Amino acid sequence: MILVVSFVGMLILVGCLSRTAETMVLLDEKVSEVKISKSNGFGGMNEDIMQSYTDAESIKTFKNAITTAQKQIGHVDVSDPEYDVMVEYTSAEEGQLPTHGIHLWLGKKNEKSMFMYIDDDEVYLTSVKNTQKLRLLIQ
Image (tube, rainbow, N blue to C red):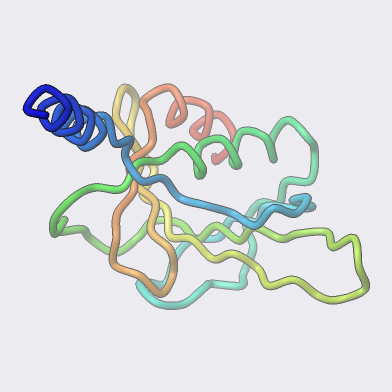
């Protein structure tokens, strides 16, 4: 009996230790366009678009950077966002899907970038590699 309880306890401990970090999510729909604008600050989207991406490679770069960005634990002090990212979807049905609004702080060379959902206060960090790819797109 002690052996069984010990084994179950170890499984629970290993399960807790191996929890992966929470990442950002997008809808399970086809992304049709990603738009970028200079941000006017928290909580809203600047609809004065400076760049728009509809090609598959650029969309893939944004999707990967967003969906692999890892949530940071605890409170993170941040300045006003640099950019607003608007992810638009193509619906298989006739209905209009909402635009995903995300704030972006684009990291410098060899730095991570930060994302935050528009109406949230949780910060998600990208990898340095994804920052490099984003920097090539956003100019």
